[in-house]
Length: 119
Image (cartoon, rainbow, N blue to C red):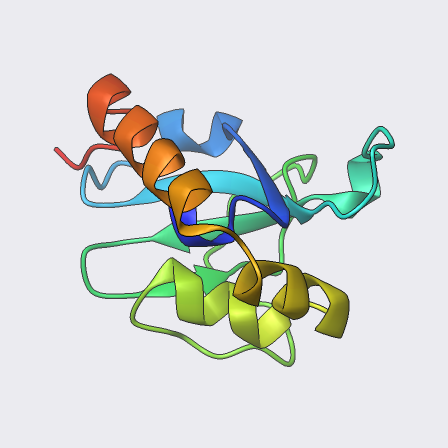
């Protein structure tokens, strides 16, 4: 998450409370290259486990939960490779040019707050 934080915004998902599997984390993500508010349709839903990451077909605002992956996407072993696969050329360039101090700072914040933890 720290590696792509310069080009992506992340948010919680209500679906975490609906899934019975404590080995899964669901969250929203959106490419954000401008300083403009994100719209509902800008957000995608992502599912991560210890072994794989995937973009889901459903959104945060769907009526029922489904783990069907989004069309045109594949499973990846981690979030970085998944987002590099689905991001725009501008986002890839921004991620590539991100200063290592920024990445380290975000990583330290995520580790200190234990924002994402597996059961």
